[in-house]
Amino acid sequence: MMTTNLTRKRYQFDLAALQRLAASNYVGLQPWLADLEARQSFVVKIGRQLCFTVTVIQQAPFTTDIRIAQQAFTKSLPGLRATQLEVRLYHDVRLAEVISCQGVAQLRARYDIPNPSMFQANEKQQVNQFLRDWIQLIRTHGLQEA
Image (tube, rainbow, N blue to C red; front, side, top):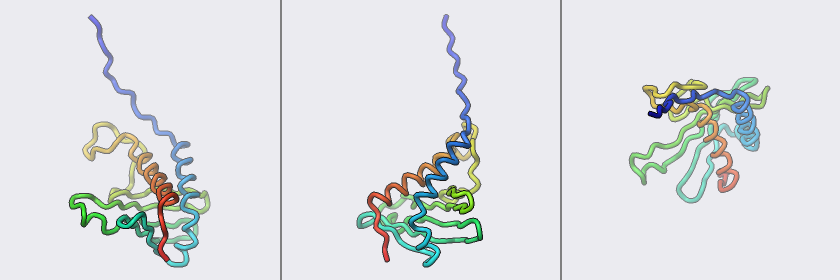
């Protein structure tokens, strides 16, 4: 008779990887920082229907909090939840971290599986990866409105 060990390997949080991702996101957001300081808000378009508003929601000497919110796309697709991220930029250490995603704030570094909110074990890593993917999409296909 053969037995199988069904214990799942526990997710190990990698702080260095998250910090590398946050540094990459800060560099990716860098081109828009001057515009945000001057105007406090701007719109980025991808194609004819996909628009995002980037808005400063709080500024301090060493940090800036911005909101990236998808606009008006959900009217044509009822039930689709519009993307909304809040990102804190740490200017002294040059890092950008997602502090809220879809209204969920204070994401933990690791979640047990299963959990009542149905988060992935590496939810914090994934939302910061999503920010990196969004930045890449904007660099490749986005147009900033004046």
